[in-house]
Image (tube, rainbow, N blue to C red; front, side, top):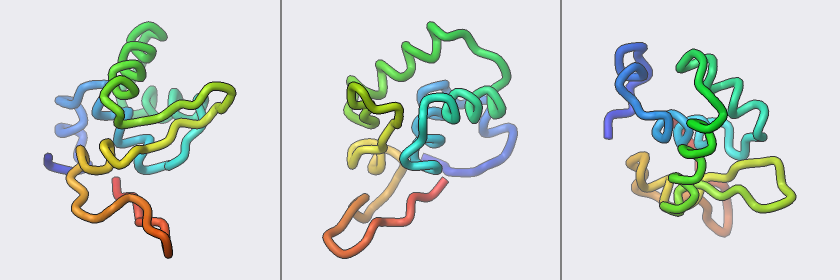
Length: 99
């Protein structure tokens, strides 16, 4: 997976991929900020599309959105999907989450 940050690259990404990248970059990210970041990157999108993308990433185990918590969290599976070769979290330190 190519992690370039160009406008052309963003144009070809799915909402799921943009969401995963936003969660990784801002880890953890609250619901309102995530929607604002995605709107800034992709323009307008409807709430149903947002919910579908969130559901897809949750079902694939790439993000977590615990009940009663307004934050989204990146999982090890999501971290690996972005091309990481090191663990997301270790006993001694939190890995640097790259965009």
